[in-house]
Image 1 (cartoon, rainbow, N blue to C red):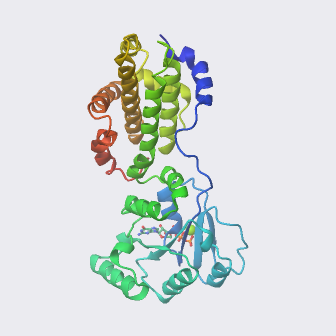
Image 2: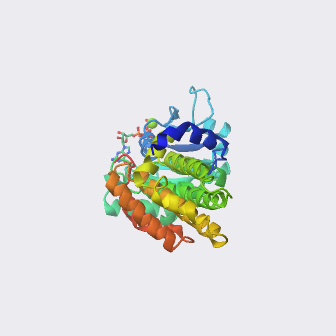
Image 3: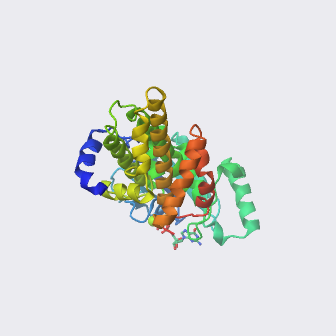
Length: 351
Ligand SMILES: Nc1nc2c(ncn2[C@@H]2O[C@H](COP(=O)(O)OP(=O)(O)OP(=O)(O)O)[C@@H](O)[C@H]2O)c(=O)[nH]1
Ligand SMILES: [Mg+2]
């Protein structure tokens, strides 16, 4: 059977299904400020991709701010005082204060820090260009941060945008400081921590799995298959959106067919089980839930690997995920622990 013949039908069904993942309520408001040229632009590009729409502004006193969705304001006469009076940082979800490790904690850095604290902003202070200083200089800087800004080593992430050091840790620190309503949007947009993406994509896989179980309880044999497939297509396209892939329903359907989920002998067996009175329904529901979980996990790993898996690798991966899902349906997290270890080696989703 060529599943794509049914694509228009599935697409209609998908449009009737509620979304599995939260939709961002508001655009992300994340600001990067600092004195001099601490690497604001490069860090934003490393964290959020070089297509991130950055607004940048800098005064002649060399205090600058860059970020996403900053309010528009006049660049003339920009200064630290203007930054304070316009309350720009107060209206951000989070402000990062970047300190250039090559210039250290200067009096200007201290002035900016004090202004932020005075404005009620709890900045995330970050040491940048850490690749350009020696170990002993780094330790001296940490001490300066403690003495002059009252921040401990643990409170000051250290990064190098050029060497891609500390970026996934920084993304996780940003995520944890953001209001809950912005965390999902940030997890999607950032491109350095696969763990964050996984953490946010996992609940949608579990939700789809539960819904698949419920759909499979539908009373007519063969009646639930289209809806189940539509749900799985939706799940796969939504997982893809976390990893920056805008997958069409057709491509998601091809993926399902490639890994060998649905449409085959197992699906017919699952439908046949329903003919057994009583327990048959529960078995069928469990099979659908575990199958959807395994499919979601397989898709997630496929996206994590930049869709670079052969059909055979996908089928093997899916078989393994199915085994895990049936073995331990209540703890789907374990299905991907091996993969998240692999993922942590990848600093950029493009690499
Ligand atoms: N060694 C090193 N250099 C860096 C790093 N990040 C940025 N730079 C360099 O520092 C300079 C300034 O980087 P930008 O990202 O433009 O800094 P900025 O804060 O946006 O500067 P302005 O837009 O001029 O205010 C560039 O020459 C970068 O290549 C880093 O992690 N390590
Ligand atoms: Mg810049």
